[in-house]
Length: 103
Image 1 (tube, rainbow, N blue to C red):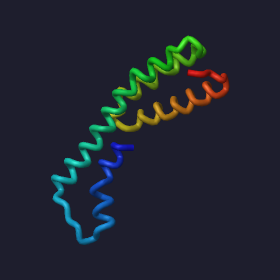
Image 2 (tube, rainbow, N blue to C red; image 1 turned 90 degrees about the horizontal axis):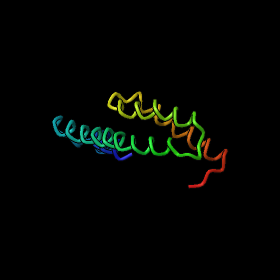
Image 3 (cartoon, one colour; image 1 turned 135 degrees about the vertical axis):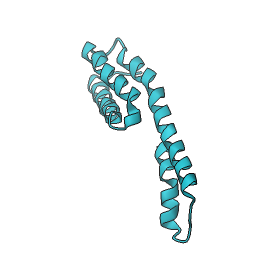
């Protein structure tokens, strides 16, 4: 969320303030800072995915399904693989709710 706020900040300002002009270099700097937050958050999530996937209370296939999610997070620089992480989060939530697993 923070990454998208950084990326959209200059566009939103230009939309809300029609007379406002921003230097293109400044826009790129702010946008790239937001992208860096996105990539950094994806990299930080890799150990989380591995740790949750390796919980002994979850089925074996769950651990195996965490492998492509962790790889996709490593490739989040290209954006599309990030959706694998989102699908993995949905899968984890569904399995945890169905089994009644507590932390």
